[in-house]
Length: 303
Figure 1 (cartoon, rainbow, N blue to C red):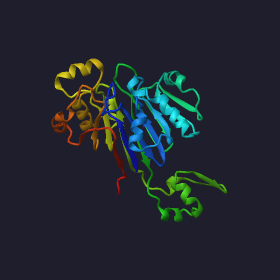
Figure 2 (cartoon, helix red, strand yellow):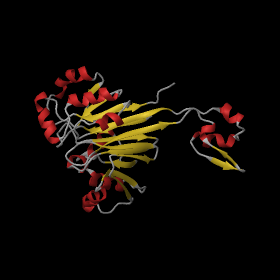
Figure 3 (cartoon, rainbow, N blue to C red):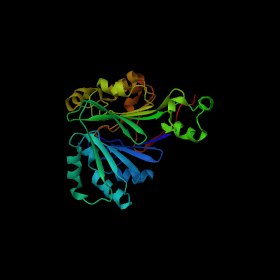
Figure 4 (tube, helix red, strand yellow):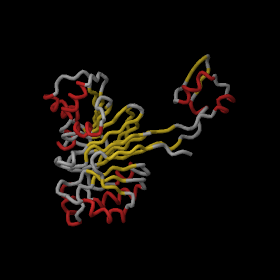
């Protein structure tokens, strides 16, 4: 199972009831954070989530509302006696940006490793997560992320017996390991059936609609997309500042055939966003207007 928690839903500036954008996911005890706006630590505390297990921090881009909470978060992780490395992923210039912010958080008991993105699409293996990073269309370099939890095929004991594979190797082969012993090689495909459907979540903010979002969110269990503006008359403003409207996000979710879509990162000037949701649902019925702290646990499909 994959736990998802949207810590903040505000765009541009924090509000008393809406924190700046950040997402955390948890799988097998390891956590990913995407973006870390001002006040993210407070949002974690409200949900009772510890920052210590955060192994990977991904940044969509380097505007302040997506990264300004990082120095304090790192200090808190250090004070929690974390010593394991933390891996950060983001557009080119990530290390320079983070090191500049660390002027106020210079001493940490753990090492930071950097992965800087430069291509339109890059695939990364981070622990048990397979991450697809794809460039989107904002007024600075910005990436969306799809988090995949891949799932191997079912273990077939009869095939293992027929191939005369020693019982002591079954568990290791089931976990995807290739084993060589006494001149023989045993591979996972000898005992596993076809790969099964895993879990897939796409997170994308600060962009105009683009084909890449539909492509990499295709058939996702959940797509979390920005809807900066809901008022129809603000379409031109969305185009000017390279953001999306509620309706554009809904069309992406529809075209990508996702199971559910959460709207996030909406404008601080948008007070009664819920009044626009009927029209959004006409486009994509499984659309939800997110609130801070919205969470869900995704489970594998049972065959």
